[in-house]
Amino acid sequence: MLVTVAAYANGLPGAFQFDDWNVIVNNPAVHSFAAWWETMPGIRALLKATYAANWTSGFGPVGFHAVNIALHAVNALLVYALMKRLLPSMEVRAGAVASLAFWISMVFALHPAQTEAVTYISGRSGSLMASFYLAAIVAHLQSRRVVSALLMICALMCKENAWTLPAALLLIERLDAGCRWKSALRRIAPQLIVLLVLGAAVLLIPAYWRLLGASLETRSLGDNLLSQIDGQWYLITRPLLGQVLNIDPDLAVRTEWATDLVAKGAVLLALIAAGIAQWRKRPWLGFGLLWFFIHLLATNSFLPRTDVANDRALYLALLGPATIIVVAVHRTLSKGPALAAVAVLAVALGAHTTQRNADYRTEIGLWEVTAIASPHKSRVWNNLGFVLHQAGETIRARYAYEVAIELDPENYRAQVNLGSLEAEEREKARVSEESVDGS
Image (tube, rainbow, N blue to C red; front, side, top):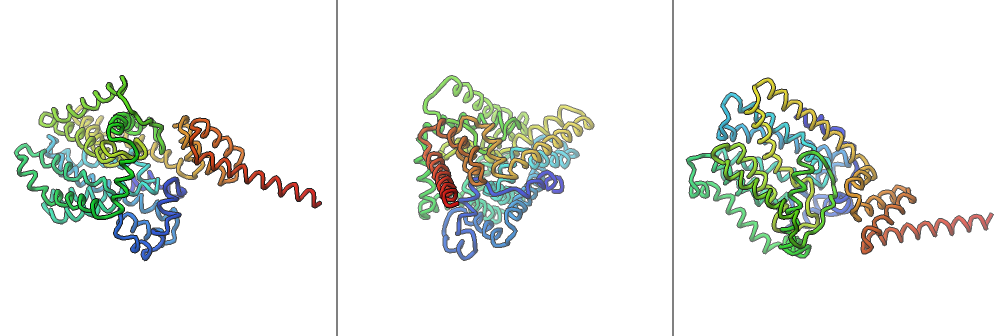
């Protein structure tokens, strides 16, 4: 917990960013508990209650960031508790279980891809959901199935992505070589019932209808599946490897097969096939691969989202690669070199995380680095222009708006923003002329 807090401490002074304005700052429904209650029943009720608690506390953005960091530290502890229980089923000798669980939780806590779910305040939906999600798995392993089901409900009240929990539990149940499918399904029955209840909620609560409708209107299911090949490839080859961290990646919607999509799709299917093939021979490898892809199902598979991919989609999924890396190092190297290798990795990841947190310090700073990472995305340049405009840097704002319009002539937001800036400049010029004439 101390290491996690240390790695994220420089994110405490960060400003509200991007979706934070619509979701929190300009959303009166989370400015008091009375206002929050009036919006119920609604989606993500528990998440919004935490926003209301933060807002009414009066601590401002620092308070929001402190809660996000605390949640991430708790999740690292839950990962440690979970892996201590699972590693013995992955052919890890008893004497090494606690050490490997510790380093897996360290990689999970310090990986820079997690910053979007921690330092970006609106990313709380993923980290808060993960707290209940991981706690539900630990409770299930303790045979507290009713408690596990209740925790799953809490997870769903933070973010709908928690619907993958039964699949994750089934994966864990099957780590036991003697476990049969019928027995495994019986053990996860409470979570399956909760999943059915979620389906009923989608039918009964209008807010869920609107959310589902907005998703289906974004793009066709076929185009989305093609686009998600690119999305998953991006997540694996960019933020997962720490090469690129980007709050607004430039990923186009794909509408037809192409050579690169065939190649990327083949690699992704090969990784899934490897997870299945290695399940009994190298269970740590099979578990890591299948856990990773199961947890991308919620965000990067069938249902369309506005963005093809976001770094925060890796938050829970990252447990899989962390397990593979740490166990592989343990099995490949002797004790001393293995410890040194994972320690160096943890330090490098923590340093990268601290560096990335600094990008969130100001809105201008975040969109400047995003424009470098996505130089051909119109929305990025419009957002950069907007925050520059708000800061009074009109020359730079005008340039950013013009780039946004050049990249996408149909970007009406950029057109409106540029028109607003020009109107302000004309008004200033008029006032200046009147002042000169008056003197």
